[in-house]
Image 1 (cartoon, rainbow, N blue to C red):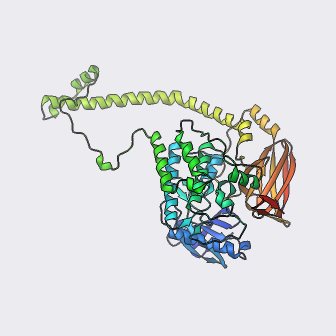
Image 2: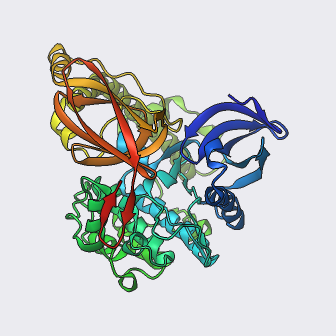
Image 3: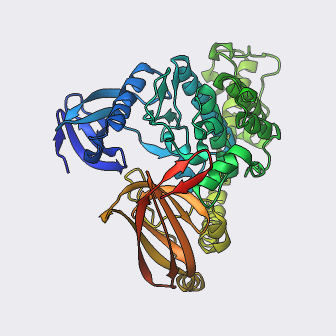
Length: 492
């Protein structure tokens, strides 16, 4: 691994992909954590990819917004361009959808409103992101949301894609993007609408067994029903998502600010008492001399009359009684709270622990949930963006035997021209499609399975059989293909 890049000391690799490698590093001059993205050596000969890499730096440099990732530096290392941006601590929305926990609805609404504002900032500069998806929306540990990865952004009328070739992530592409037509800020609004659909329902509106099938559904099909996980969500949310994802551009929200305004209306349903516009509007009430006397039990009042020296106060008798009564009430309330807290701690902790164990065991034994999940659970992740896995809670003997008898572990490798590949790819296993890193280690139910891998301009498919409790390695050779957008077919 590289040790230094100029003044930056490399700490570790936090991500790898087709475009390059991302490192966590320390700026040794000002002692600040940063992220450094270096272009992959095999991409250096491709002028289009190199220009796209450098364009990301220029795009981010033009955008100054609290919810857009900040660029610190740009340069070259061993003739390879690199980009230095702020180091983000947290998880992207794709990771939250896969492993959780997802923020509550009111928090998601607030985060989406911030994303709308960030996109509006870009759109005002004539910049279209073109790759709005959960993986490019990052939630910091502090609760702040960041829009990142402007590598596919379009500035003005600039075009870096070849004729007949589309770039982006297919599930979140707008119809005009798939057809190779002009993309603008309305394209980003469509993609954000798909993201909202997935965040609230945990499902993708358009899915299929192949990329071509998904594209066909986006162009001509109907989305699956909008069924939010939060059953208390107002029905107006469905109308907002439907309008944002209309196939006709002129029927969508015409700006992200208009979309944000509608989200704010939904947000009000989750707010009991809205805060004032300014904190200065909170005025301290004037005391009521006639009615601000706190009543306390006679027994406590008698105790204070016996043990407190009333001559300590120099005011009149009624003022003395008010002060003593006030302090007596505070002590009485503290005592009640202490007793209640002790009782809750003794009785509630065991109940809570028992509930947690039952919930964890139910989660791990829920095979139906695993079967129908749109995103398979991964045993390991090659990307450095993932957090380290926490140890599983202890299972019952019956649960452990059931899992061992039904599942086997599979290592999936892919090759192009005999060379092993690594990085992001679209993988379809038994009709479920998702984006992840190759090689992939995954647990599958025993039996026959079909797999297809799409990596850049290469694709391959095969069948394999999983045996319970057996580790299996699957090798898939990928061949080059291209999309014919006029007939919606794929050739190799």
